Length: 98
Image 1: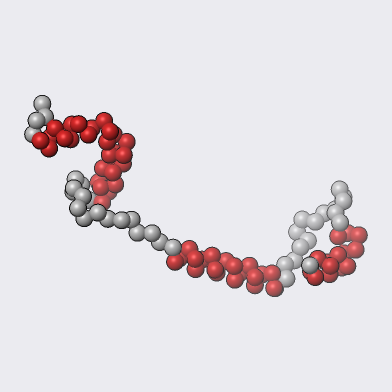
Image 2: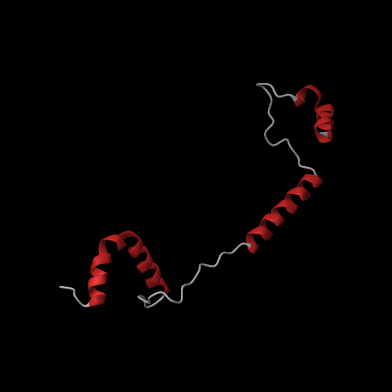
């Protein structure tokens, strides 16, 4: 609020823009504002660096992949086509597939 009052006193009638005012590029940030922004950005970077989520790994799950990329592909295929291929998988596991 203090900065608002000081700027209003400094610019007088020019503080309130009109249709003929040219305000673009006239603002010069103070060192306090820059320092506050830098501190805020550093806090954001620290928070971003601390956040990491490990995906849960199930040791008991069937291994149907040869590498990590293939595992991701198989998960995606299962997600989209699993309901259609469930019966075929069961028949293959039992040995009754035709």
